[in-house]
Image (cartoon, rainbow, N blue to C red; front, side, top):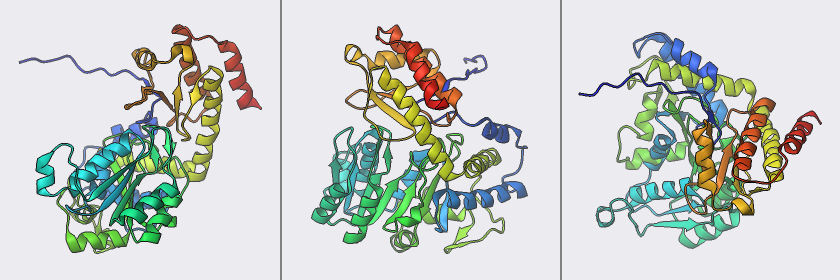
Length: 407
């Protein structure tokens, strides 16, 4: 039997696509929560309040808005559970994560025979994956053309795709779904809590899934936000879903949502952790205290500062998200992206490469919305590039960054 010494994990700067560095206030709520029964009154109160704050964060009146225990993949699995074998689906992919979403959809929609033919990567006839080139956004025209041609029951799109750093056309997606009578599903993992929008403004999108560890900035293993319109819940009630844990209706019952109404009388729920509830509750408090509009504006402001700095270092930025830069290194460093990222991560500076071709560098600013934080990120990235032989004057770039913030 092997017994290892205590695990010591040092602080690092999470400057990638997510998770971001958890706010110390969230960690404090987590660590200071008492050892309590999961039915203790304050745990139950926290669940009720978190559910209501989450509706404000989403900008919705949807009653079936709650958190699914786990990471963003858990929330996505919950919304994808509405898809049954043989359902006709069109899914749009323009990066790593919308590609994974497409794979999950193909698994859900496959018949037994189609799944058996290729269990890990099935290719059901009822699913069409529309692949959009890396570095390009999914446009309303692309969605319109695909839905007009295939006439599916469901359509899927990621709102913000962190694999390529691109924002996709949410309004165009909604409008095309409405025009063709299609039920839309959106992956909002990277946009909720970063961009300022109300999901109720997009009524053709019947289900949304996000995650706790990006814009919400809770601990990764707390709750993945989901929200369902009544139309989606009715479909599930009529047809069912091949799941229990991630069932859109049954999962809602654990948050006091029964028959389309809030029943906050402290009924039994799956054993939600008081620690996780406290962390998720505090993360939502922080987001709403900051203000959705102000936070979105802050992301735009600081992303612009960092964008200008890395462009002055000779990098080409190909993303249009406000929480993430995806960039090509200067010509003399091209092809060494993974080497640069590896060197940074070895020093506790957690940037990321893209996970699919072409290999690019990703620098994120989740929960780094201060002059000091952006200055540190820019300085560390400049040092890493200079160490690899880049040719620029760091002092000039840092002075330009300072001028941006003082001007």
